[in-house]
Length: 90
Image (cartoon, rainbow, N blue to C red; front, side, top):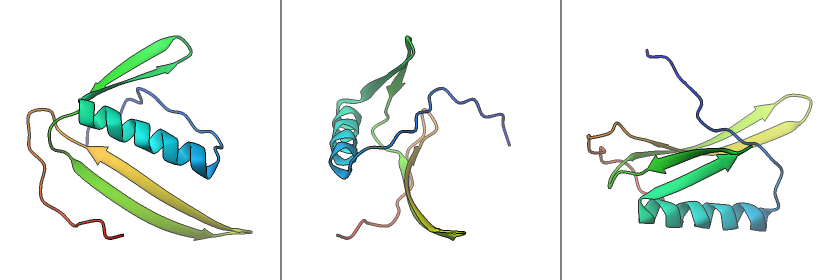
C-alpha cells in the first residue's frame, strides 16, 4: 500500500441546511469538472474525471452515546475508468 498525503481536510459543525447546500455546490463542481478548495491561504484544485468510484457508508458506534456517521467517498485513478456498482435508491 502506498503512502497517503492529506491535501485538504476540514471538519466543522453545520446545520442540515448548510450541509445540503455544501453537497449541492460540490455536485455542481463535479459536473463542471473542477473544484478549488481553499484554507488558510492555501489552494488545492481538484480535476474530476468523467467516471469515478463512489462509496456510501453508514456506520453506527455505541459508546457512552450512540454515534452515527454517513460517509461519501469518491475515488479514481487518473486515466482509468470506473467500475459499475449499485444504485442509490431513495
